Image (cartoon, rainbow, N blue to C red; front, side):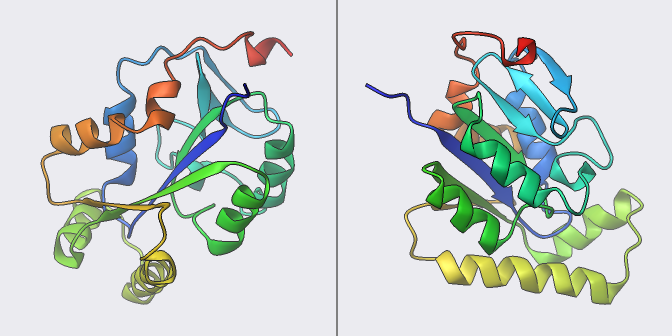
Amino acid sequence: MSVPRRLLYMIGVPGAGKSTLLGRTLVGIPVIGQTSHPFSHVVYPGGCQLGKVPGPPCGTDALSLSVQPKVLAWLENCPYHNIVGEGDRLGNLPFFLAVQESGWELTVVYLHTPRPLAMQRCYERDSRQSLAWWEGRMSHVQSLVARFNASPWLWTLDGTLPLYLLAEQLASHPCIQGLERKALENPLKS
């Protein structure tokens, strides 16, 4: 019986709370290390998180703008069975379709946070992108959500809920739970 390969990726507008939520959810899962080969990712006993932590920038937004082809090639023979990620860098339709075509069980988590709250968070963290940039990111996320609204692999979480409740919800996903399981061998040694 083969072990399923799961990839969970969180999307949302800037200030939605993606990095904060994923960070809170992963607290307590032992970190084996962080590697930069073939791109930056954090290694756990049963998988990895794409990108780097802590930040900013953190998650996949810390990766190169041209990283997507490298990640997709790496997924073909990836040593992990559970992968999590968040951010704008890989949060796009071509990436999600390619992940599925590679045989991964994909879950896209949409952290739905109202615009005023998300904009307030951006302001509080001294993020000073232009309104046009912010509107572009919001349009991009809304387009993805609309495209896959009826899809079984889109999971919407309410970004106005307390962080501890959101973390509990996210921690219930098999991909997150799989990060804690010991892998057969340490992928950092290969």
